Image (cartoon, rainbow, N blue to C red; front, top):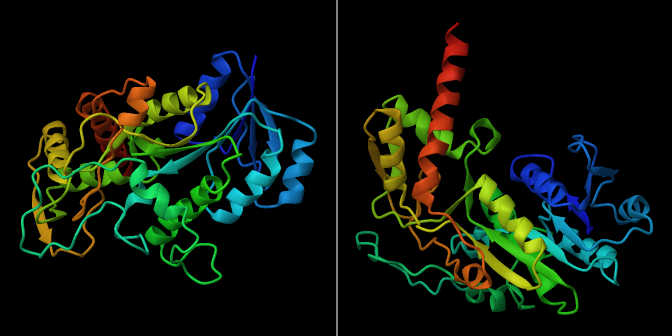
Length: 332
């Protein structure tokens, strides 16, 4: 029986991960600020992971075969984790990261995707290359990467989230002795209301109401993964022996218009669009820049991914049902 610690793990795919690890026969403990009780058969520690002294006090002398950090968002949090869980306390540290680390629109240095400026009227490439892990590792581990002076993360929600994750990963990339893996997850969908970002519900709501969806003239494909599949991938990663960054996405990147077609088919209404200029933000998952993941490393290591278009219709049905229920409740 392995000893597992999950930092966070109180909502969405984190909850699935905790139960998967427990059901595999592991001794699982969840650490959070006391916001939610863990599932039956799972231990619980209460601490603010930002407070190093409080974190050490909560852990005591415990050691772990693996730690999964679901809520590491900044380099400061990463530095605390490296100090607290280094020195033999854990055999394997898995950080849940994001594909946002590759986003050239939020990257303060050279385009990590190797792209070049495209005139607003130029067509998008027919098959833009998906990004591999190495395309950004050298850049984010560089000590001269531009950032806001003295700031933990730069201002702005999108840039702040992406840069925070990049900087957090850099803390571990610059310490080869620390046994870490960063899982760069694609956009996670499915689960109805449990998908708290509401991005899929955005499309279901607008298309179902006959409202136009804002898209770019030449949207690039992007990558997705089902909420249960990313939990399974994290559990598989915990049991592995590889280290370093690894992309996690279902097979088959989709453009925003293909996503809308699939939503329209399930909602029974045609999709309508409003085109926005290049460089302006559109609806979620509409990108005017390369934004798809290459999952080749994970596949070569032995994980078999599902196809996006195999699970997405059921995820859309969940969102359609939730929208209909919410509408019925409002009109009663």
